[in-house]
Amino acid sequence: MKTIWPLALLTFKDGLRYRILYGILVFAFFLMFFALLISGLFMRDILKIILDICLSAVSLGGLLIPIFLSINLLSGDIEHKTIYTILARPISRTQYILGKFLGLVLLTSSVMIILTGATMLTVWGATFTFAPHFLSTLSVGSILISCFTALLGVLVLQSTVFLWSSVTTSSFLATLLTLATYLIGQTVEDIVRFMSLKGTGAQISPGIQKTVHAVMYVFPNLAAFDLKKYAAYGIDIPAAEVEMLMLYSITYVSVALILAVLVFQKRDLA
Amino acid sequence: MSIISCIGVNKSYQKDFLHRTKKKAVDALSFQVDKGEVFGIVGPNGAGKSTLLKILMGFISSDSGQAFVAGLPAGSVKGRQHLGYLPENPSLYSHLSIRDHLLFGCRVEGLRRSDAEKKINRVLHTVDLEYAAKMPIKKYSKGMTQRAALAYALLLEPEILILDEPMSGLDPLGRQMVVDVVHEYQSRGTTILFCSHILADVERICTRIGIMNRGRLAAVTTPGELAASSLSDLQPAATPLESFFLETIRSHSL
Image 1 (cartoon, each protein chain N blue to C red):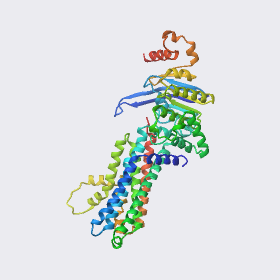
Image 2: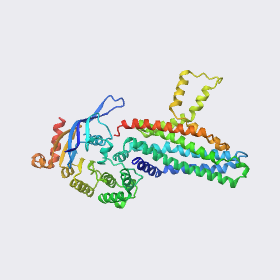
Image 3: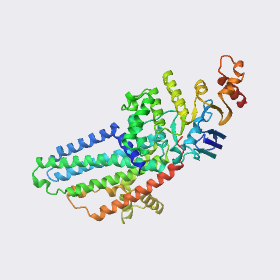
Image 4: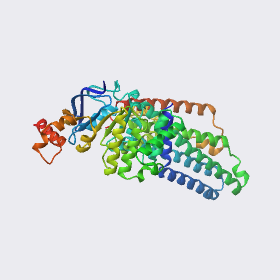
């Protein structure tokens, strides 16, 4: 930890200086303000509209970090040789990966906490704009938990950034693979559910079915972390579901980081 | 007593995507650097100098052979505790200041804040960057970046300094500063491994000079041997090291 923590702080500080981070925040704040403006156009479900848009902004703000910032901070380290600055000190490659990951966890968590705060402010603003019965389903607990699970999903995607950045030699390829992981992670559950339906009329070969199942186990199920619907309708989120998501994310992140370390240790940093 | 040693080190790079052809960057290289020595390596572009230094730092692994730094396998984390490294093209974090970098270096070593501040101020004074300590690196000139990277290498007063082209991008004042730093550290007993294209600087600084060509150490000499030789008589416009360098490269390339 003696070497991991300084590296995490350096990564956090470096990340804070990227303008894209502020672009993400401004975009998310704009979406939230927009939610407050347009929600009045809906006769019912005002709170649902506000929370749908605000929580989407929280997720989107978090997701843009691994895709645009983390890759810059990780693959960029190797491309621009700034990694020499780190590894010239007594830091092992395992500590490097863990320190960078911890730094990005700090950065992502900070951004998502700010966006969660902005969501709560937007909801608070709505109490002045709309009559109380429009906001009767408000559940602060569900909002906070849904933001927390969104953060877990982002951290899972973050860990795949580390894996792809270790395997590939260019940040462009790592970005493409991360985007592919995100798309697969968001859709694979629906595809598997569709395949298991009987009487859909679709003939799916056993080979494709096996492939989809393999993909489901290899790629993270990111759709599972999306609990916006609970918060939007003010339904309490079952504790068992949150515990399962925590366990899943810890397991997935650990496996992805171990693989990243194994690949990275063998890699020439020429 | 040798503090850096290479025994039959080989390293090849793939030339094409399918790994069918390889280029030998370091070819059965063996040499030793004794404690307190300033060992200079000179050679033409592509001779394998930077590859050798990266192997010693553990950034790349050798295909075969053994390399040791401070009695430990090259690249080991413990070995790097004794090292200060200046890369060929210093790449510091452009959004951060040199102070941020130096503070990071001190934190990794677990230094207390007050001790860290002393070390940071001392090393910034050495490279004359006190006035720009809090400025982001991206606002630095090339020479300032080079000095900042040198400060990062010198921060913890390492036992071994590995300097890859330390004069690159420096004006005459900056070059003199590097010469003074090398002399100061040499007088403290620091071992210095030094790669450069500028033969005059190598001749001024080093106690022993190796000439590298095509991945091999083609010759090793000392400033004393060069001064005693009559090589410069053959090319009056050249310094003894320049003459020796050209003769060695020509004969080695045949």
